Length: 244
Length: 76
Image (cartoon, rainbow over all chains, first blue to last red; front, side, top):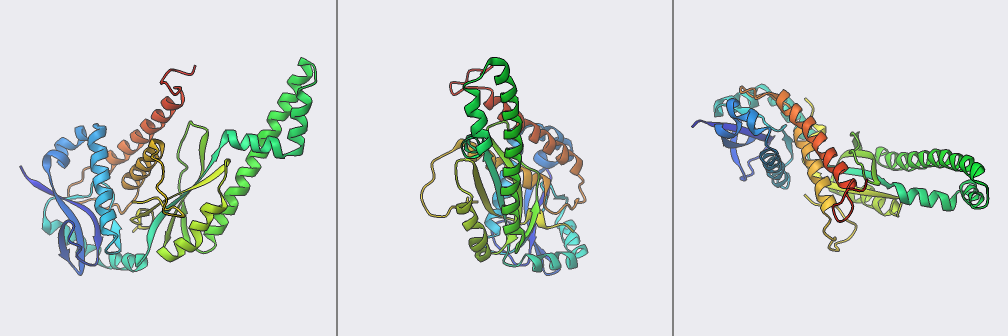
């Protein structure tokens, strides 16, 4: 059965973790894969198998994660396949200048993920206790008739919704401004969630390790509490900063 | 890949966190990175399709989990 060449990414220097194809002053981090996995006639079925997809996607990430410890690199999207070494070399030659420019932009930098979450129940509790008008309405609801209680409940609900929105936007803006001030960042889609923990800001940052320590780590301490939290992930290969 | 923490304390194992990280991996590997079709076009379109499918699946898993109580019984 024929082997195919799966390209994980491109670097300037040999790393030694994968099958490397050098050409045009660049190195393609590749792996020989079986046609049974990625061949056009097998792939369609394999893509329907969640376990197969998970395994291959995690392998793609792990290979690149090991490589970024040694060199800056351009991560390729999942499933970049070539039929021969010559085709890989030809791709390196065709894109040589673009790759070189991109690699110099990525020098010593990696991608980090920063997500802002809020806990819906904790935020409602916090606002109900700290907002004078909301506390007052809550108090009033305890000592009125059922009809009036219905009206007050609606008023309370509307105000709570409004105040929640304001508070979420205030914290989002604060986090965004602190990072946008000095780091290259991209806003990503928020992660969908049906739980009480909601993701309201999802950022990818491109930065060096020192700026990460100086700018991002203190933020996780600043936004820490029952209502809001920051989740940081990385370092990642610069997936979100490598458009050609 | 490590989650950055302000100190080196061992974090408690949290399966939710693991799922979120897997979701981040899928997001990045399937949806971003340089798109160069090799001479074998396996269909970037196919990958886009599974990506959409996986997002739907992950959302469904989250929804299913939130509809079950701690013992796995439906909440409604």
